[in-house]
Image 1 (cartoon, rainbow, N blue to C red):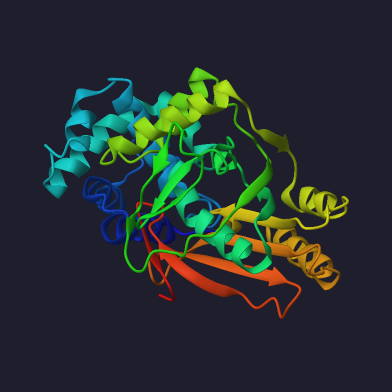
Image 2: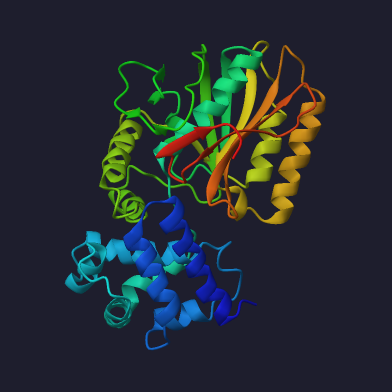
Length: 350
């Protein structure tokens, strides 16, 4: 069971991420104030401090921050809005104001603690496409993508986005969105790529075309990055125009079923995910590893298999972009590091 020190420590871990990796000083300030001053005068505060399981793995700080930002986006509390604008920034003042906010909005904030955050960030496709380009370079241009932890499926639009990767252009020229991360290194070589299909699963998939779901996703976008919120809206419009193949399923069940399906010759099957591995129960993660290893053992140059991921390294406060591929030794190759939301990408080892 988590202790109160664990809970406060989880908010300081998130403070570190916001300050060092995410470029979100206002969020860092709020996380620091929560860690220092959260009390039991509200139901929300008491529930957070009595959290029963590992708070960082449960993304408890992000759950709570999403609820606070939702209040701001709904113009529900001027005092909280002043904190989010950076107008109230002295720590003791932030602590006192947050205490009052929690008491005023207990009933609105409590449901945000019920489930994990759904940060369905299209910018992560910029890092994932780099992995897919590496796969295409090795096995040929034709790829089918299967994604776990797809949330609302916005990264299943990876075949419809346009990318500017340090000057290397990838994707349809008429795409409604061009994803242009800050590129910190050599641009990747231009490589033909033909993503034939994308499909995904999630244990609790979101219908992003529902206005309430769109509002919820917007609440998980850092207040300091309004351009991300604009891009989110455009991506959701793309799903409204033409949907994605997204199923409700346990990740291990789904991966095992997909790997058992016939695979066309000349097409590489790719498992893809971003910022999801930490949320998988250990038995589910182990089943996926075993299923990929078993399928990889039977992969051929005519029917290859690959695994592209973007997952956090907490010690380095960056995301690690890696690729495994079969046939071959299937060693995990780190090809880049990235910002959590894909705002910058640095090719190569960390």
